[in-house]
Length: 436
Ligand SMILES: Cc1cc2nc3c(=O)[nH]c(=O)nc-3n(C[C@H](O)[C@H](O)[C@H](O)COP(=O)(O)OP(=O)(O)OC[C@H]3O[C@@H](n4cnc5c(N)ncnc54)[C@H](O)[C@@H]3O)c2cc1C
Image 1 (cartoon, rainbow, N blue to C red):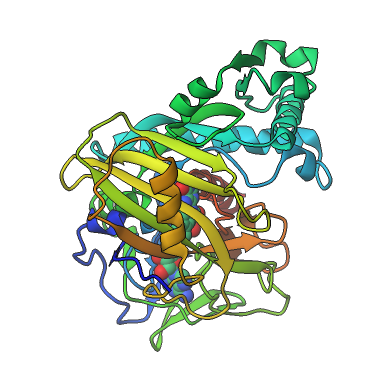
Image 2 (tube, rainbow, N blue to C red; image 1 turned 90 degrees about the horizontal axis):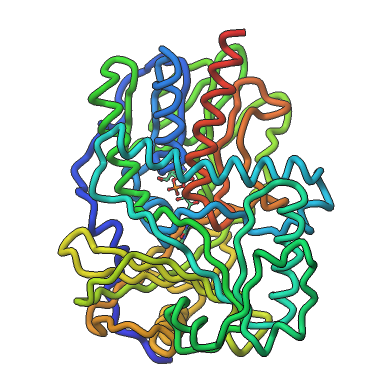
């Protein structure tokens, strides 16, 4: 098999400084709330808890803050879930779905506020994400999605359809103002691609290195909340017991608290000991996703793209996603591309390919479709963990059976903005629960 020459590293990790921020746990401790996991979910949960209350918070991270999926993703902060409105309607009311989509959209404003409040001025890029559709069926489904969103009051994004496709789809008159006719070449231009797509829509995107942002949030909290925020890095949590108190074990030591918030994404769970079965037990499917990046001397506007779907095997992962923004090390463009995912049952090996040949496949997609220049020789490849819930909806809030257990977890593929919104939500509920 062809082995592609590649530096195995995430460019987001290259952008970070790797000096430890927190000491490993070395003594028995007591706090109010323990957060397990120091990615964007854990650090934003800590941020809102400390901002909204006078509680004491301890964050336990098994390795380094920001080095999990938050430092290994596509960098696209987008307000989206990986299930259609129609599909979600099978299990919940339309008004609830619309409210969830509106709530996730508020993540754009939340990430901006966090960056302003913590003085993180060089790492957030406001842009648009363009999504390209390549089959009539996808266009029809997108029209239905728009109709349902409009009906229930969720955000709707106007659609451009190429002139040859318009006669092949049913456009409900209520969408007349939101669907425009265009040409194939205009679509290619908007999507920055050489391939043919028959429709496209755009939505707001907040582009950021969520690992670097996690580290900046943690540093800010240590600085602003001395005595109230404790951070332990290199402190893997092996078990948590739930009784009169919550007890979190790490490396032979224990931290006790009133509640624990699991923010562990798709990593193996610590042992959870309680008299009832926690909701998260056996409910997360673990995936690994892979990415390739290049840099480019061309310094163009930041942008993001999702392409449905790869030509060829329809059984394969149906899309690729591309992000372009300045590489903070030198200001040149950084272009990252991701796509296929696969389930994983063992510990994730960052040096392995899942499946073999995946990096060449992603790189091949970039080479044949992307219209802008990139440096062939600067190729970085990496992978990262993802956790998916059975219903594809993030697990946020208290466990229904186990007092003291809370969640802001499962990335479900698109998790950067929803993690921040989840942090805000869990903090509000925890603070509310305590004041009652
Ligand atoms: C390749 C890839 C591409 C992606 N692209 C995008 C994208 O473009 N846009 C988007 O929105 N989302 C994307 N995602 C998803 C996004 O990265 C995640 O949803 C988000 O980073 C989740 O943040 P988190 O804090 O939950 O997880 P993480 O950043 O993974 O943090 C979890 C932390 O928990 C720690 N931990 C785990 N177990 C323990 C334990 N027992 N004790 C102590 N600590 C523990 C881990 O070390 C880790 O630091 C992508 C993910 C991957 C892998």
